[in-house]
Length: 181
Image (cartoon, rainbow, N blue to C red; front, side, top):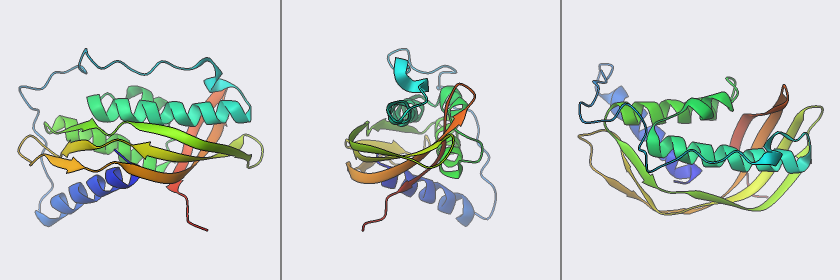
């Protein structure tokens, strides 16, 4: 699911809960598994992901997207939370969206993303900007067990990721659609 599609899903959930006049009470889905599906495994952590280099920053950003795809598919946000800065508002919004969707019996399916045309620019000590074209495959989104299944068209977005050093590795500091020049 592309960054734009995920943003639309977030907006739809916020709008739906805002329009109801009362906060949504999320009841556990009795048919939902407490653990992620055994068929979907977390992405392997590449060796270069923690390198303090441009290549390490680019590898980390790509890894972050893979972990985000995994979290969307399973609701397991443990690793995504660990590698996302608490100050990264888009990251925290995605994490909450994945948790809320899965707790309410919803799902994300497909929409896996790939990186191309990657470039990196150092932005000071311990901070780099990673620019990439991110292409998402078609997917589906279901906000809750009772919500209709929505088909989401894939697409390509130009995204800039701000990655920051945190100890011996990286954390996602921010992400945004790159503005057209």
